[in-house]
Amino acid sequence: MTLTRVEAAFRSLKSDLGTRPIFHQLAKRTEGHLFSSVLAYHLLNSIEHQLACSGDHRRWSKVRDVLSTHRRSTIILTDKAGVIHHIRHSGETEPAHADIYENLGAKDPTVRNHYEVGRV
Image 1: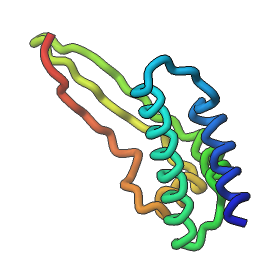
Image 2: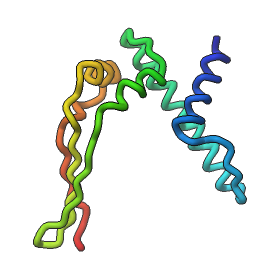
Image 3: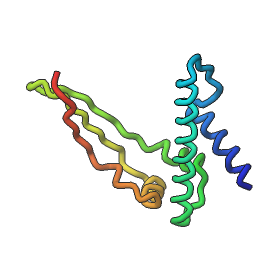
Image 4: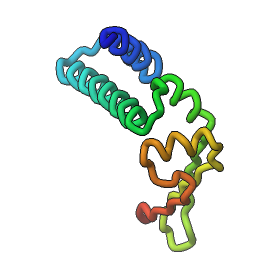
């Protein structure tokens, strides 16, 4: 059962993160690629575990499909004083999105974030 879950996770990682064979010329790049893949695998397992603890037994692929319809936009603008602003805004959450966010203990994704990044 565990082997099946690991194989499914790596299949998902290969398709979602593009971790298919990449032929790096330097050992450090290979190590970085492997580190990113293992980190992504641990995040995937953590998400599934946290959902399971709250009674939601969906696999990552289903969670990804449900949340793929929730969009977040970033608006970048410069004001008259030359300050660069990044404004992040999410679309309205559907009940299926809100259920997953609540089960993960995620903060409200519809809150608009405004950051001053620097000056031109």
